[in-house]
Length: 193
Image (tube, rainbow, N blue to C red; front, side, top):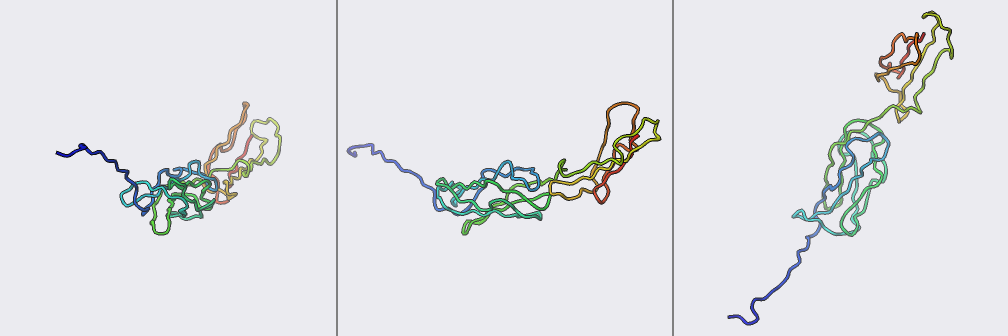
């Protein structure tokens, strides 16, 4: 037999060199145009066996992979000691619609995000509501004022073919048309009596 038996030993597994990237936190799935994503992407270095690699200082670059538009914010992030790169203020700044982002680093390939739907909502502060006269006389419909709604989005662009509904308080008053869509110039017009 062996003396000093059994013999105990210990081994510590370590990750191999970084060879790939993974997205551990996907960016927000729905965002507003020109606004930083509420959930920013987080990228992890991986080895060939998909183990996380702890390595600081690796620069990860973000870019638009699909869908037109410019990526705004700080488009690079460096990994920390755990091999994690966290982006802080990415945004898509020119075109609404469906987009994906790619994340890449020299020698490590790239990964692509899930789809991000970029919306361009109506801006209350940039849109306007005007009336042709500020007061009318009660007249069973013969005294009217023209109401004009001009819609602009958060990028200050006119919003054509956008649904509009107007309403009023009080009684014995009416709109010629209380709902409709804006024209090619982003304008909806109706009369009120």
